[in-house]
Amino acid sequence: MLLHVKEVLSKDEVARARAILAEAPWADGRITAGTQSAQAKNNRQLPEDCEATRACQQLLLQGMERHALFFSAALPKQISPPLFNRYGGEANAFGNHVDSAVRYMRNGARVRTDISCTLFLSEPDEYDGGELMIEDTFGEHRVKLAAGDLVLYPGTSVHRVESVTRGERIASYFWIQSMVRSDEQRRLLFDMDNHLRRLRSDSSLGEADPSVIGLTSTYHNLLRMWLDV
Image (cartoon, rainbow, N blue to C red; front, side):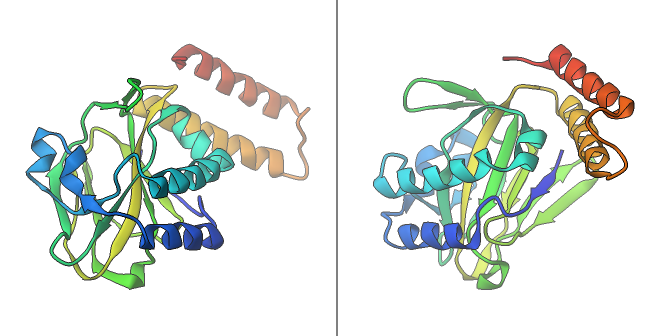
């Protein structure tokens, strides 16, 4: 499932993150790349253990925690600590690659990369190029979102970041191990949850309506069947 999740961070939160990142110690992005992706990666990245990274991670995790649409789509079991990258100048692109199946954390934990995520911190008019290109069976999808918005997509996808030819593209990226491993099952649950929210918002219905109760029961029984916790 490829999904645009709007306003994970508010404009004020984006401004706070950008102020922190403006003074941050950027380094060569290949320090966290796997064998294949290191050959395609040409960007700048924040070290995982610096104070700027920790401060911005807290902002992002708080934004995701309060965002109902994000939770409904991802059903997160574990979220890898968000990382931050910058494209511009000579370090301006990341060629086609597939993310590693497992992300190894500094504390020894492991996250299966069911879902890949990019949260944009630069506005689209601040840079030219820099689109996230995601491939699936329907072809290529070009993604360039407003600052504070997030895209999530299957970790199995071939993807790349096009060359930035003007300005700078600043973003966060991270991975999710979902409680529901199958992308197809997550999509069905997400669609059902969306329909349930619409039913609940219908003024002629209420939580006690038999249709609402029945569909809510079906949703949770499917979740129970597919859940991995």
